[in-house]
Image 1 (spheres, one colour):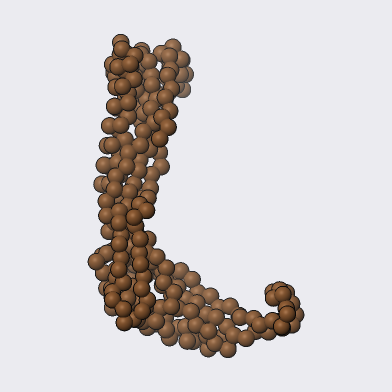
Image 2 (image 1 turned 180 degrees about the vertical axis):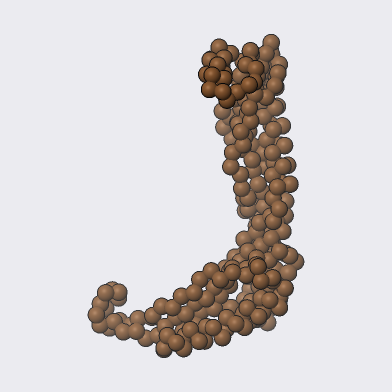
Length: 247
């Protein structure tokens, strides 16, 4: 990662502090040494404990009402299977319901949707739910239950950490240690010492799945249980710190 290093003279900083104090926003004593601004980043990883996936039913019939009726019946069976698999109601949310026509076009037609001679041949109904699995040991069982119950669309899973704050705290400590080490290095090169940290600002952070993460979803009902490899999830913390150096 590219390091951003900025040196400020004490005189320039004194002017800034005087301006801020004049606005009534600062009661701190002004630094008398050299200021150095350092960017740092800390990262921490661990195995995820939560997975999200979506599952749904797609049905097709000659009449729109029949497509929706068939879809509702299959979706009801799917919802029962989800509940039987141990997923709580709060972790199941409908994400989309749709009904759309399927068209046929005359031979040698370009298939333009605006052609007046196109004909509706059937209707396609879709219903999809998002599912959160909080026990990863049950994930394979849940996916297999979805397929057995009639789900013909399954997407995911994506893995996350349910309570990321402890991991963020670890990443934060690493970022601080990295910045401190860099400040000490510059202080040594300048024949000075680190007096204090003048300011700290924390940038955005978020979960980043590692490339090793994968999920193989076998849909055959008679096959072995669906293999899942959650890998690791990492979070990062970016910081901007200003240190005061003095002789």
